[in-house]
Length: 318
Ligand code: GDP
Ligand code: MG
Image (cartoon, rainbow, N blue to C red; front, side, top):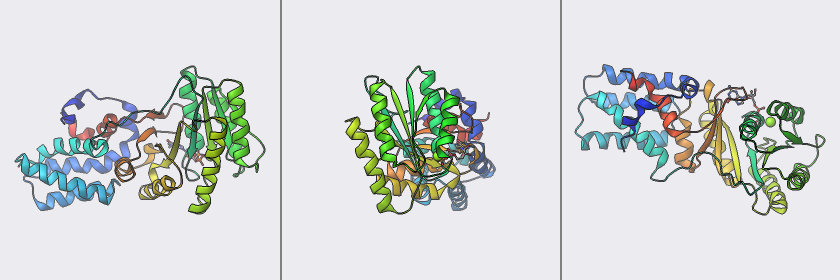
């Protein structure tokens, strides 16, 4: 595919900075390749270990190693440094897997675009809603937040703070109200007042799968009652620092509801950035946005090229 070749142009410092921890763990890959004279089983073992440490996941790593070995033989490569190009190109292929992955979220200017945020408590749902509201607001969209996390004390106030920061409207009721009733009334308001974007914050309760499914499908039904096309996207928020645990959450939520994409937060504090590849490969869930910090501007569109460049920029030093 030749992705490696186009990389000299890539330079989004935000990504590079945000991915520094994961890059440090993958950085040893560069050292390993630079310091090896030949390609041996021992070298392959070392590469495998580094990828597992970066939380690319066992399944993806094993598949990747198989491809790497095959490519090395096919292309008759004997110099370890030349593996770099294959490593980068194959990382792309694993993410893309033959399909074109659309970047960003679905938006239609003629609809009320409803985005529902789901995920475990503390992953960054409320924060990401604040940041996304800011993005839409800058784009001159009329944005409404709906505070449907009525379970946790302080959750509504936290969303209000983000609504203030992003200078958008918020609909809320008292703590303890049935989330579906908040959603219903909030959407009625959005419809009446012609909002373009509605961001729904939900509680991150992962009590058990049956209850989770019931709760999420009730919310979805209510959305469909008011806006017949339903939510434009259901975004699962995953904390990148939780690594394999985050991958497990992807599995549970994907079974419980129709998740359309992932917002991967806290990539800035994580050395486990490799989970991007696992989530896409195992559950076919594309990453839509990544959180690279706590500030309002720290949510950026996921870009596979920037991402892989951020991970492997050591490879490209002259
Ligand atoms: P929620 O329970 O899912 O709504 O999670 P919150 O939005 O309350 O976020 C939990 C914590 O994670 C807060 O302290 C946020 O500031 C922090 N957080 C969220 N996203 C990011 C991110 O991308 N980077 C960093 N470093 N912290 C984040
Ligand atoms: Mg919250």
